Length: 216
Length: 251
Image (cartoon, rainbow over all chains, first blue to last red; front, side, top):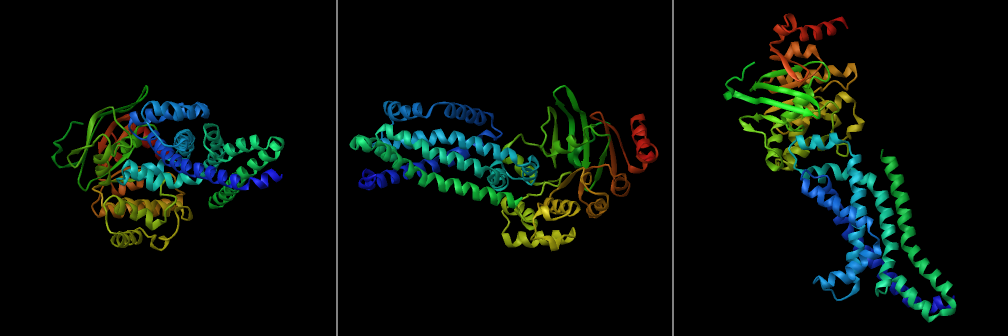
């Protein structure tokens, strides 16, 4: 227990880095995922095909392999970055984007097709139909599954710890070595700081779900 | 029916065919609608009349033939198609009002986003249209708070707000309770009197008698008869139409 208290600065540092990784990757994944979902429902067959291919590959590949790819293969292909953090963000956001794309797509499908037809028949273009009519209505059904995906993202960010990024799990490994006799406490401390992010997200999901239920 | 000189046709369909897999839903359709004409399309369910209506603004694609609005051929996709659709008003059986927008926003969204009309102007024009269809006092409500008849009148106002050259009605009263049908038909009759070009798919024979210039009777994906309402109702030529009318009259 005193090991945890003595290591609070490290924990705090790791907590902030985990939060940073999750927020940045989450934002990128939300944008990319929404674009992928838009491509998936677009009238252009090539875009639909690309989106489907990307989603199937990214969500069916183990995250660790995507991390290896981002950290080791990308630099060899000429993509250079100073820190492994960048590789971690690339890996996390490209993996999570696939799940977000699927959630948004199912939300889009939950909006009655007549809404899009009515929008098209007053002369809206594809992007206007999606942006003004379909996505605002899809958001209501999409938020609970999106929050599940973001919780998974926070936990998945621990894989970065194995790739020399000193986030919560990375510090956890380091501290376990430093305090070999108090590993249990060290790991409980790590878990606690993860819960500090994921539990509020879960509560947010409950809150939104209830709000959505009333809105109908 | 031969293809007429289509010089003054606002809507013109030539040799239009469509298949749903094995099913041949539109068989070599030729139809010309002049400016200001009100054409009512009737026929048994499954005869392809809704598909025909939806093909005119390309909510349904066609396999061959061509469709032109005001002399311009329907584009395949993209911005050109959107522009053309702005000129063709559409009223659906299930209203399809934007569920997350207020009544007023439903009507102003097209003018503001598509025609780039200033919000103040769009609001004023929309209110005038809503007054005209008798739902002005509902402007701040959401669609779900209105009755079916009111929603359908808003849908008509929404289409009119784009100042379309032609209005398409796809069974506009089929989803309504009987007591609400007339409030919608009255708006449509008024519109017809004001000279709007209209293509109306309906089962309301009263509307066809009262407001139509022509009645087009469809069966099995073909146009079987194309006559004035007077001619069609009193003296149908095909056995198919006679059969259809006799069934209506016995009910």
